[in-house]
Length: 127
Image (cartoon, rainbow, N blue to C red; front, top):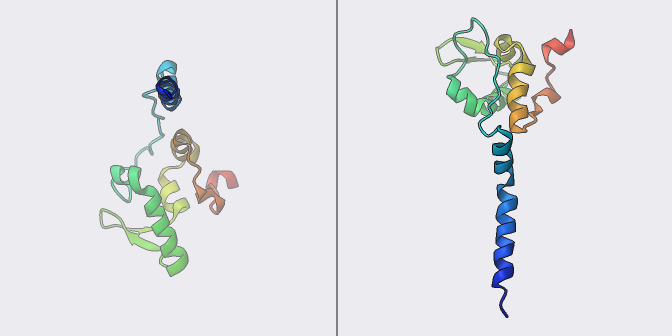
């Protein structure tokens, strides 16, 4: 019994299927596409450094949620020693005023649907 040929064909088909998304993006010219986010104008600092926020904002927001909802703590101290309110809508969206051009562009690009908006309402949607 010699299945060497079938195994090789199977491996080639498997590798082609696994690599298809990469080759498709290269062919479409979108391999290096990164969404352009709207950065707040006139705001010099965030509650944490930019690199930390890019990688860990979800953890920070979860920690804030737990502190506010479970422990009743509403204030924290940011990286510069300023006291800030732990609030997605009043603190974060106070600077990032366009949720569509900041939050949604990145989350759509990554295929992530955050559950923040299950409870919170974008202040612009209320108007």
